[in-house]
Image (cartoon, rainbow, N blue to C red):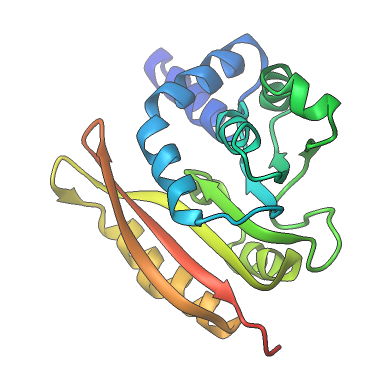
Length: 211
């Protein structure tokens, strides 16, 4: 493997599981890069007071900080595979953690360490690309979501006007059908902002109350 390939492999690994000083830097970089779609995602959650919210792939904790600092009396939990980013999130959210408004958990979306129906809203921003088993991950999201709760998965499906066919096929051929099988209702693909040329969308659904 040449030097360029080694560097590319390192960066790919860091974006999926950031670690060390480079991982910390990438976490802060992602906050700056993803701010438009982060704000848009939170807005589309349409949170009500006293909701219990889970972010999958919480990274350095910027979205959770925005939610916790609003006036909704929310309980916020962040899940991430990167211990480095969880440390960054803990520093960024010291007050909310100290006040027991927020908790951070090291773990994988495929096997989440939470009770059934623990959360009223579950969301993720740019983490679905790294889920190892999409079907298992969505089943876990359905399991930890309370009836009537919202799941919202934000991702990019193109750049500079060019569609990413693989991502679009994943949305239409996997994400939406699996969520339909899990009896999510009001399934939609929301059109989001263009950020740095990247086109943002979100797959949104509500867990059925009749299960």
